[in-house]
Length: 309
Length: 323
Image (cartoon, rainbow over all chains, first blue to last red; front, side):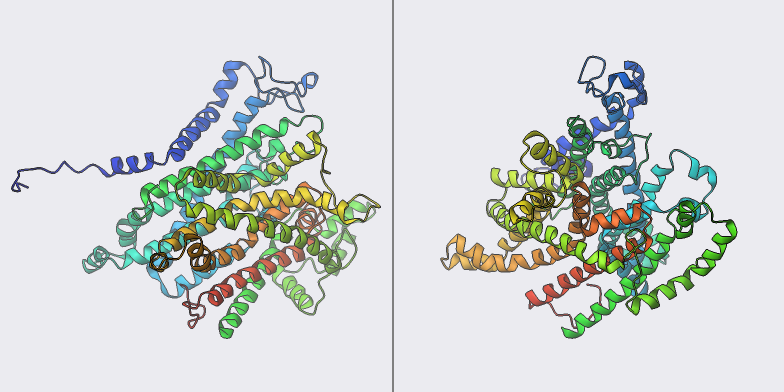
């Protein structure tokens, strides 16, 4: 533009830079992101750390139970004399993995249902939304407890899977995804309903694009923001559900450590070793609050109408 | 309005029926069946006896048939017996439901009484230091694992300070109200702390949204004091979504009560359901779950109705339509 003064507008900044600048303003969200990266790295490298320090997470040492923090055991030992710090790292692997995996799976289910309901509308929409309302209305925790207590052998699953040590891991991811998709489904449906009427979608229809193509290339990219925000927030919720189920003995089964099942014995031990109850719960708390702040920050950054802080 | 309530009641009945089938099927999928338990308690039973018993109790029939029979009996008011307690399930459930009601009611009232003023206070000073502090508390409240919060409170008040009992419902023999209160204190505190955060956030968000409206500017412009505008004009409008969300959060509150009861050995519904599931008390678990579902569904219905009742701008002419 060569206007009267010859002034030139600065070149437009890429979207990612704009988003990053807005995200950066939410300081708690930025701090949370760092905390989460740190926790993920620490638990991701748990085996490396274990090898480097020469501590075996599963090694029982009954002569050295409830030991206080020392040079060889940074946070002391638990009721079986196992190193608490290394077990917390391994527990973090499990809890974070379940959190990410189940949140992603819920997001996929929710997105599919939301897109279908929003784009095709009509009876399908009414049915899917009634289903969503129904699931939202349920008392979740008792339902999750029943789902967690289901005998997999009666479902006719292969014996090898049922006997495998990791089955409690998969089971918890499946049951949380089965009930966790509702928020994303609602958000995606709402966003789809408004995007569906926009001119570029009409143009695509006029050009003869099919439903799948329109949904995949024109609608989905425009409903990504609420999906990202809701998924981030749901990682925290999943970790809370996983921890309480594992704590009640219905989630991740020992010997696999998770932050929840590491607290299972804590209640009997509060008189002898109250500090044992502290660490893994604190880690759950910090992780969940970090995911909630991160989601809040992402919402502020991604939603142009969000109130600026 | 009446029509709307009836349609929603009908929907509630449908959801409850579907749930009853799902839970019936799921409970059938839990490890072991009643006959297995009989076998393990009586080693003289032969395989043939077991088969005969299965046929006698109809356990060899397809699940849909068994469900139909159960439903017919349930509709006649025959909800069956608890295996562990050997008494009709309702006889066991109802007193427990009352206990849970006391726990949930006290915590709910306490957290609302604290959360609403806190939310309003924060909304009146957005982005101030006080607002940030309240916001931080809210995030802490929604992020804390309830069972861990309970553990920490037990360690603080029972183990370290020795002020309050760590669990149970009363000292044996002591029937005074003061004694009961001592036992209730920690469970109520736990559930209250776990609920305040969410409620405060709703109140703050709703109040901030309302304070942006034109009629608030008008009220201020005609010279009303800020306090009067907030408490008289804004609050009534801001409370509409809050009341609804409070009713909708009933399921979460119940989940919290289940954990709290389990942690404090409090004889309520939540703990009963948990014990029933863990102890293979199929019938008790089934009815307990359905009762919990029914109460939650009714709370949701109350939320919808309260929305229409509180906000005259909303019409439910097209009942059942998805907004």
